Picture 1: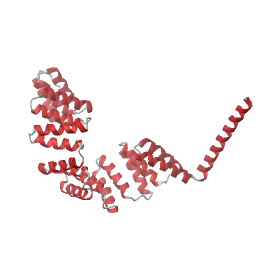
Picture 2: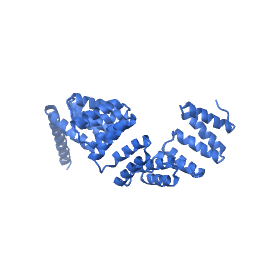
Picture 3: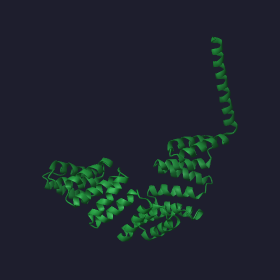
Picture 4: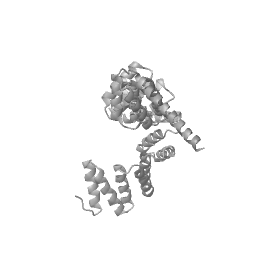
Length: 324
């Protein structure tokens, strides 16, 4: 029995040695084949949303084949998914240097540039992507949002119109165009676009929030409250929603409820300067002096706006506090 046990162990070790030898020979003599296997694993991981695994296997590919261009594209997309935009751009650059000229690579690099605020470079990439593949709604949508960020509202609307024409059943372009109309002061058209976005996607929290903001600015607090309630129902972790609802409560004189929502907002974003300021005012209205002072002092820690600083110091003086 002991002999048979030792023999089995010997056979297992022998098989393991053979497998290692085969793998070594395959990697040594067919690195491209092995690299392609790793590339497929990286691509599948990217599709599954596992960015770290995608990067890991893309690295394996590039260790075997440093000029394997598609691996740079996959790794760049994974870095982008992890908000590491500079690394993503570096990989997209290398892929393009190695001959990748597809529309999607320029589109994804454009989005990375846009995320970094490099709007002109983003537009150049979106232009090239559209030249290569002119019927992609997502690219017009992305370029339209960049024009919106640049306050070039007419071009933004032109691009978003095209995105809607190409993909009329997508909610995002309607929402984006609504933002542009709102920025231009055309609130009726903004509301119409937000409503259309919601018609396409009933759970589109951002569109409910945006519609609520318009109603709030128009003084229609009942409608504003209804919209923000829907926004919170569909996305309960957005500080902006709670902040806006707090503002609505405060505008109606319900400072206790306002404080509750401001606190919820700060749970989601603990360095939200505007919320501390608004909560300080609400505490002041509730005659909660200590709490108001603490929030005003937090604003002073966070703000870089000299007008805001001067305003807060005046409030603190009115509460009997010394200021620097």
